Length: 332
Image (cartoon, rainbow, N blue to C red; front, side, top):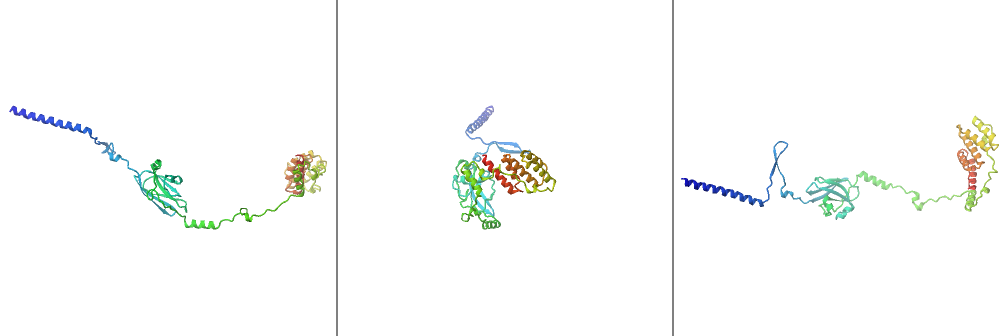
C-alpha cells in the first residue's frame, strides 16, 4: 500500500515540474516578439472608466500623403465660386488668381494670392474685377515650401479663364461715359492751336529797354528830372473844403507842403492818418506822403505810397511810380 502511494506521489511531482518548464519556455520565447499594446484605464468626467491606448497602432502612425482630387470654378453674377476636394482635410491651402495660365511654380510669381485658408471642405467666393479673364489655382502650403508642385487641369487649376460682368446698369453707364467723352482742350490740339496776339511795349519803354541792354547808366534824359518836378496838388484840395478832415488836410498842405518842408510835412500827414479817414482823403494823403519822400530821394518808400493811392487815383499814381522806378534805376 505504501509502495503504491509513493509511486503516485512521484507522478504528481513529475507532472508539476513539466508544467513549470513549459511555462518557462513560453516566457523565453516571448522575449523575441513585439510587446502588445496595454490599455490604460482612466476615469472620465462621468466617473466611468474609459479605455485608451497609450500608443497608436503602427498602421495609424503612418502619415497619409496629401493630394488634391478635383478643382472646379463656377461664376455667379459678380462672383466666382471656387470648389475643390483634397485628402486629408485640415491642411493650410493658398488660392491664387492670375491673368495667365498656371503651368509651373514660376507661374506663382505673376499670380496674386487671394486667400490663405484651412481646408474645411467649403467653397471660396472671389469677387474679381469685372470684364477681365482670370485663371485660378490652389496649392498646399508644404508643396510651395518644397518647390515640388505641379499644376494639373481639373486637379488644382483650370486651363480656361473665367470672367464676371457687372450689372446691366453699370454696363449702360460705362457705355454712356464712353460716348460722352469730353472734347480735348484747345492747347491739346496742335492743329487748332490759337495764335496769341503780338503785343508791343510803348516807345518810351522800348527806349529804356534799349538803354538797359546797352548798359547805359544815366536815365535822366528819358524823364523830367526830379529837380525840375513841381509838387502836385489835387483839385479837391485847392478849393474850399466841405468837411473837417478836408480842412485839416488843407491846413497841413498850406503850412508845410507849399513851403517844401518835406520832413515836417511827412510827420504831420502821418499823424493825420492815425485817425480813420474817408477812402478818397486817405488816398490823397498817401499820395502827398509819397511826394515828400520822393523829394527827399527816398524813392523806394515813395513808390509804396503811390501804389497805395493807385486804386482811387490811377493816372497820377502811375505817373509818379514811373518817376520812382527810373530814379531807382539811375541809382542802381
